[in-house]
Length: 487
Image (cartoon, rainbow, N blue to C red):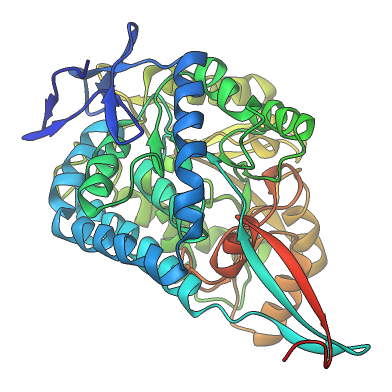
């Protein structure tokens, strides 16, 4: 029986799973509170288990043949309607997302929620416009077909639940797969809204299923199910190792985006003010961004000037309620995560790393943490080598280009990097030298949906984006016909 809807920022949100086109409750729930005010109880959300996972995979497996049999153009029609519906409900989704995980409301309304609509539009269009590869060889005419792969499991993190849910769902659905989405338990509510919008847009029952709960309970059951034919995960390397083992047992293709420790390299010939402004901007979203340039690497000759500019831009940040348009840095997601960030900084102090600025909670009764900059005693410091995922940056200097590239590549991560330089030749050399899935030069966070996205090293495996994502969610078939044998 469906549970009563929770009222969140004047929006009714179901706390239940969405399976086979219907809402299903669970006997057990988990509590969701708002990081904006930890006394703000948002909802008691259905907590799935192995039985819930089985119901969801069964619904997806039953719905898959019908959805897969449609042409890309036929599948695109409800996806386009879903995109239109998202655009019509931006403010509603933004309010819930802000309450649930505390991203700045202004950013959500201006860019983030609409990006979800663009994800569905763009992938539907890519699937429709796909041209099969055709060629002749050794007396045969050949072509490559994309076949929908089967039920897909998608597991998303808490730091960008709406953006990453739509980014992963869109290619899976456009490719013809039925999907089970498990959002993170710290921020599951915008996914519930997405289920309602998809239902109203005419996505057939069972084609999109949303299951809530803890990873070691319902998540583990989902990725272990032999009927699942694709798994896409964003989260920690530790969790990815468990999912990868389950995928390997069932021979299931698996993509994983696992965070980063990106370098932001500033050369003396760059526009220092722009570089410093960009560096201070890495505190956006309270540093809870996997693509952030968290390691500031600055050419020694301009170190003093850069730090002065950086501090000036960082001083302009305003910590506060994410619903206030004046706020530039909101709270962290959860008390446990705040404690994790504090632990990194305290261990850095004990290690001898120098806290240049910040390093404390802001307001003891909330989840805010001061924008923090740390100069490590050496490159092996934990604060340099591990992802903090909070408003904590490190500061190091280099003497030449070779040293800059060596520092840039000195962690196990390789998701992204940022380079500031006034030299086109240096941009080319350093851009090639830094090992990462994405490099930005004199810019940041510009994303083309058709470009490949993913990481190197422990930042992940596989690529998403554009045709790369559609190919991942498909089985490719080569058809060869003897020339002159068919008329």
